[in-house]
Image (spheres, rainbow, N blue to C red):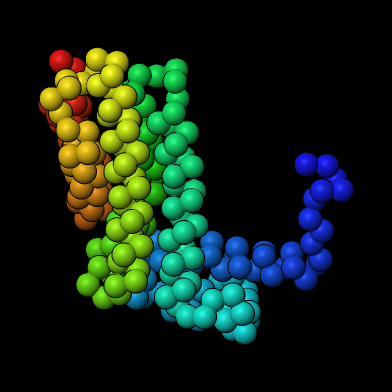
Length: 208
């Protein structure tokens, strides 16, 4: 793209974009810390330093705001996941292990006060909001699909037996991870996640 091809943004358009980005960023932080229902729009506006009218210029409702947060988190998470799982300097199982170990390190860096935003929202909203539930289900399925592709590649290079069903094992990994993260948050300890990872790679994903 040349300079002549680049879109020209007015200062007003740039401010609008920055305001929306800041609202999503603050909303993600607050909802991640205290949950969707406990996070009021007023608290988001106050922390972001944005007037109420600006919020409703970008989002028709809190539900729309929640969907925007899910989309922003998912885009960032999938980009990170794809980087790890496409690292051809490592074998497929090692890529998966490095990614999950990094996830544990991130949990520890936050003292287990926050977990997986998507998992937390799914637990909180699955029985309350069908639109958000459907989107969260789709997001989780996209993670499982990527795990499954990595496991299939591991089979192709001989790291896993062909008798394993990659889709089923990917679902097991996702469910086990989310459950272990929840317990680590409750216990304020890495123990549940560490035990899950050790058993996963020593037993379920054991080399043939």
